[in-house]
Amino acid sequence: MLSLPSLLSERVQAAAGIDPELRPATRPQFGHFQTNVALRLANAEGRPPREVAARLVEQIDLSDLCEPLEIAGPGFINLRLRADVLAGAASQVLAEPDAGIARAPQPRTVVVDYSSPNVAKQMHVGHLRSTIIGDCFTRVLRAQGHTVIPQNHIGDWGRQFGMLVEQILEEGLDASALDLPAAEALYQRANSHLKESEEFADRARERVVLLQAGDAETRRIWQQLIEVSLAGFNQTYRRMNVLLTDADIAGESLYNADLPVVADDLADRGIAAVDDGALVVFTDGFPAPAIIRNAHGGFGYTCTDLAAIRYRVGTLHANRLIYVVGAPQAYHFEQVFAVATRAGYLPSEVSAEFVGFGQVLGADGKKFSTREGTAVTLNSLLDAAEQEAAPSIALAAIKYADLSNGLQKDYVFDAERMVATTGDTGPYLQYAHARVNQILRKAEAEGIGFGAVTVLAEPAEQSLALLLSRFGEVVAQVGDTLQPHRLCGYLYELAGALSSFYEQCPVLKSEGEVRASRLALCASTRKVLAIGLGLLGIEAPDRM
Ligand code: ARG
Image (cartoon, rainbow, N blue to C red; front, side):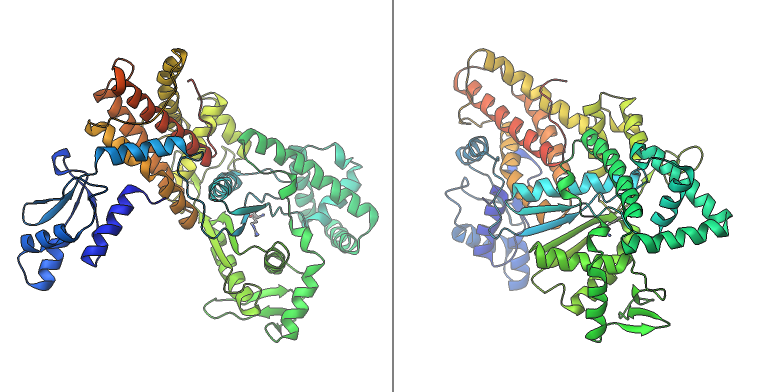
């Protein structure tokens, strides 16, 4: 369903032939929207603007939606929606199960690659952002009726497992008894060991060969490391209330068998060539070629991502690929997409989108790190927010802070500001929901059901209804543009309109039809707030 503003815009454009660029009216007496389209046309046609405006007013077909159009000042056209139309829109939001979120006309199969932490390392702030953003995309796209396949591309393969397994054997550890912090400590010990001892480095290298060859003991320990890491990741996912499960795990090792296939395919078709012993693809516009296989015969991150694309398109039948990864990896993905396109792994009907995000900064404006200068773990960040507020509020604060700015931007992690119930924060929106719920609860206790919005005389009521009619369209925009801040901004505006409405229009103290209508308007707003917050992965509490 088109929102009322879009519908108006379409109708005016049909008569004027150009985009009317409707703007919200600056004052209630000017109606709801204003356009300068007549002034622009008059300029082009060399005719008096008011004359052009009068002609347009004759031609524009809006009697079913608006009060008679008015011409103002030098030739502006003012549009005022009919109160019954606004009331209908607000009632429809209440009646529809998903508050007017439009089903995509052509549902797609979308792979969202997100979270993707690394085995034997704790999740850090970058993984926090990826997890929150990717989870929001999954929710929004599913609400639109797309099939979403999350892919948690965990780092579960690579040379680091040589030293990890060797260190475990040397220390006589039972890897299955480790937890994630202990596995990370092991990682650090193995790393220092590697730097100190040539002999250990040699053993670690041989161990990589054994791992690749499928040696049983090596594989068993490797598998144990994955399992203890997954247990740690899952704990964090539960704490974050995100959708990811073990079913979404599709780590790097999944593509092991495909790596030589990709390399041979690229080599056979002359797309890749041997350069200095390595198999590479030269890509225009990139300073260095993409390395498919290094001079030692090893396959790396790039080849793995190419194999993953083939799998996602060929086996999962995805026609939209979304990658939620920190901005520094933009170059890697652009190059992977370029190679995949040339190789035909990414046919033109499949879109591949890299959604890079900025860093989380400390209060000092520098990259967020501990006092010792090491990267901050995601769990310690959650702990910090929970020092300021209850868990569900702390989580709302973090998620909203993460989603409400342009994703590319860095943002400062300021727990105290993020949990405030005033200002543009997650808890403010939760509070708006709890407050409207409180009013509705009182009415519910009187046995009142919420029917339709019927009376919309006050400007504050009308603004609220107008905003409600836009919800479905805003959600669709987020699904298309992958910009969650649009939904955040919309919900913030809605919460503001709700509080102006309370100030100007008594609800429980009003009477008769006005009361019933205002209650329905409240119920409609509560619904949009709850569903909207849900799409951000934020809980909408009934009380606060
Ligand atoms: N494991 C990587 C990291 O922690 C992120 C993987 C992103 N996804 C991918 N398909 N490369 O940086």
